[in-house]
Image (cartoon, rainbow, N blue to C red; front, side, top):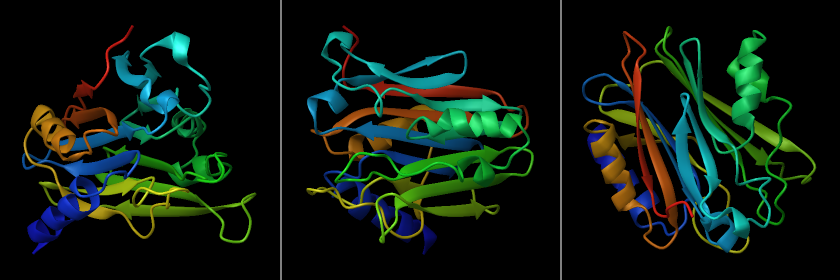
Amino acid sequence: MTAEVAARNLQERIAANPYPGRGIVIGRNEAGEWIQVYWIMGRSPNSRNRLFAYEDEILRTQAADPSKVADPSLIIYNALRQLDGNSIVTNGAQTDGIYEGLQQGKSFAESLLDWNHEPDAPNFTPRISGLIELAKGAVWLSAIKVSPFTSEQSEHHFFRYADIQPGFGYAVTTYSGDGNPLPSFDGAPYLLALQGDAAQIAAGFWGALDEDNKISLAVQQIDPKSGESKMEIVNKYSAV
């Protein structure tokens, strides 16, 4: 039943969805290795002018053609960082906020309480974030969404999973589909299958994402015992 639910979610929420936006999937493959998937999509020329780069254990977005960047504020950021057995992945500048919070002894949730949704009216894009705690074998996911009462305030949603079975992960995306304005992700993270190594998982998700709107995708694979990791990246565009 779990495999059927995961397969249906992939088809309905990803493959048949032209615009889930940015997405995070965290879980374990069949071998029990921790997996973090992060992808970005774009509709505007500014959003599409991006690629992933990985250096010093930091995954970041950067402009494919710097001369065409109109506004870097919400599109250029560190997307994935590691600290003392914690692996952070987010869709924005809150990656560094969580990293700094953990350094100060704060929890994942505490590090996000002062953050709001993205100030990109009329979409008010959610800030989505994830964390793997290797020592505890636990996963956190978060979505910071605009309040239904005022766009000046946010709702903070946190989810913790300590019993993810090998071969599965939980996903959260910024949007539930295409539209103007874009409809925000709603509800709890949903199950997806994580089959194979980082390269195989990357190929599977890249093939499922909408051909016109997908921009970049990265998969990090972490050994649960040693903490050693490897990164697989797929970029639609090349640096100019």
